[in-house]
Length: 413
Image (cartoon, rainbow, N blue to C red; front, side, top):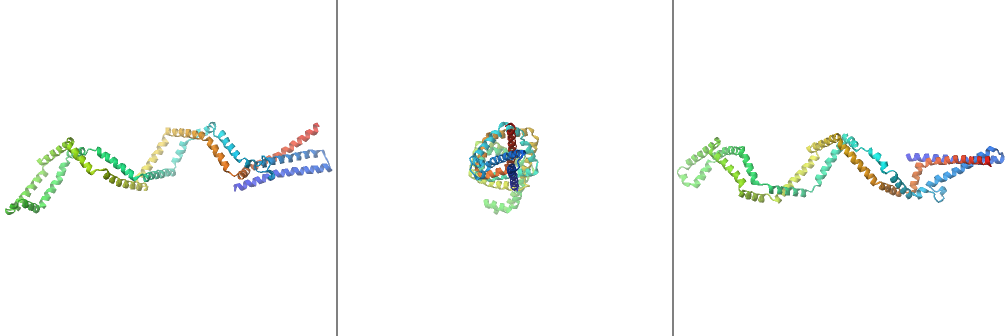
């Protein structure tokens, strides 16, 4: 639509310039006729004006036309300049832009006005952009998690776990744990749980205990083994109740003393270290740890990806909270904004100067790829309307110059 309008404007101005030339020709022919049949002094001046006007019109028509095509289709040297010199024009244009526009003096005032921080603050202040940032962060995390090599991660975790188990002194850990239980009387609580259960077990299994006693001592079965067994069971039950009800019972104290001795042995005797090392070597191997870490990692990976796809999950709330905190920090940190602007200006300045010649090459190569005739038509469409004024001005100026010359000639000769 815009191109059609430009074509109409070009055609209109061409007709105007051509019409003015035709008018000069009509005036010239008329003056020649009148001078032949009814001459007047003033007619010579009009004839001189129209004659010179035609010459100026033709000269400027030739000049304008020669830029875009061959005048009258005649391949006169140095005509159809744009089509024939397209590549040279591209080279000159590229060099001109690089040498005259992309210079330090020209670009510095514009780069000094550059404020990346203001743009970022404005961009980050919009809620839709915050959502975009959150979405991109989420996608980035998902991409990282998905692209992680499962076997490498599991192997790394297994190796780290194996290294840690090598460093851990299990006997020291056991000693520390046991000492914690002793300091908090957890062993007494354990006895308080076990003793009632033991009493109940003994009561419920009187018959079994009787059979076991008879098996060991058959003679008891002949002399009232059940009575003896009942007395034995009653004695055991009473003994267990005494231990349960007396916090200072000798058995409790003995157990506490024995456990303290075990703690001391675990800390000081090397044989415990060897025993626990043997246990580690038997039960904690790289292969077993690898099996555990593979399963743990796969479960963890699925869980993380699942949470990332859930907008209400903690990880997404955490991402959003960090984005909001980052925005607040950025808006308040004037030093950060100043540094960003400074480094951005330095970077842009260096890049533009470093690649100024490349811009020229891009212009040159782009022009070289264009079709010459198409380029000529486009340029004529853009500037041809204004160039028609050259023809109009040439006609009028030529006429005036011709009139001036004729006048001066008759005055002085």
